[in-house]
Amino acid sequence: MASPRKRIPTILYSNELLDKAFKKASKIQKEGFDKIDEARKTAISKISVAGDVISSNLAKYVKAFPSLSKTSQFEMELIDVIIGIDKLKKSLGALNWCSMKALELEKEYLGKVKKAQNSEEVSRLRREFYGRLSSLVNQIDQDLKFVAIARDKLKELPEIDPTIPTVVIAGFPNVGKSQLVERISTARPKIAPYPFTTQGIGIGHFVVGRKRYQVVDTPGLLDRKLEERNKIELQAILALKHLADVIVFMIDPSETSGYSMRDQLTLLESIKTNFADIPTIEIENKSDIVKIESPRMKISALTGDGIEELLALIIETLDRTRKANDGEPIAI
Image (cartoon, rainbow, N blue to C red; front, top):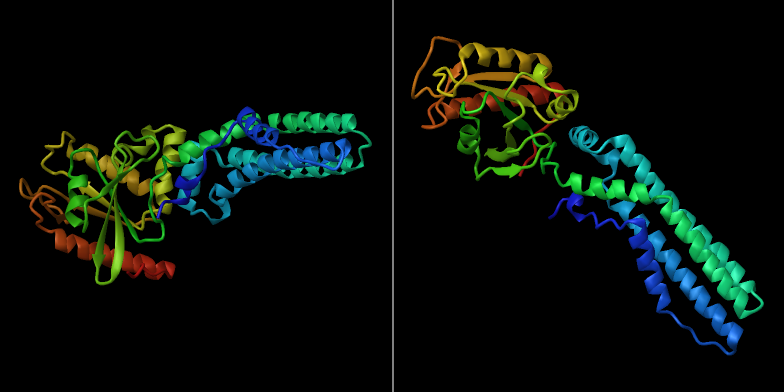
């Protein structure tokens, strides 16, 4: 099933919306028992159709957007980064206002047309309605354009289920993060877009017993000190606080990744400081190349050495976290 974000219809601008309404209305011609009756019936139908097209389309746009009150904190943070929550609420509110005003205007002019004494007055009232309806819709043109942009940007959000216990993999590039995600995932990880990354993030899943878990690779995010990020980038990264139940930080003691142990440990401290409320598991990868004296778990994402022990530690850590939060993993 497609995400609700994928089902938001194309947003028409004010001129396009008006063209749609008036084009549909222009095809209407009613018969009457005399000239004035025919004029009234035709005008009533034209006004009803034009008003309904405007009102129903605007209401459809507003309804199609995900309810912000039901959106997870993780997604809310990302929406705020790439769109702006306050701006989106304001523009959707403007569309909703215009939708209701269009119906009010329609009702007002239907009443006037029914009381019109001649066909000339009927035509004048219809044109007047068209003019006022156009003015009303043109008032929200900038809001329509903003909502259209927001619709496209919502597609940039990753399809991640924040209700599933989630493991976030961190560490410098080339330390073996994506290889680890592939190793522990039961199916090929999917690549999802994420703000301020060119590669996207890798999302995999693994199952222990009847319980499903999510594992996320974060290229371009948790791979350099957060203190080096600008404010907007940092907000996108810190949104992971609302997703991660545990962070696995990968260290490459062989330094074949191109990063010294000193730099890697500095990054580790930066992440532990900024994600202080999230348990962090420190592991050393590439045990098939080199092992150093340290209390950290040793694994090889390449050969699979130590992976079972790592999974056991991840599950144990997640269980402790869930007990502390009175939560439960999803059963499948």
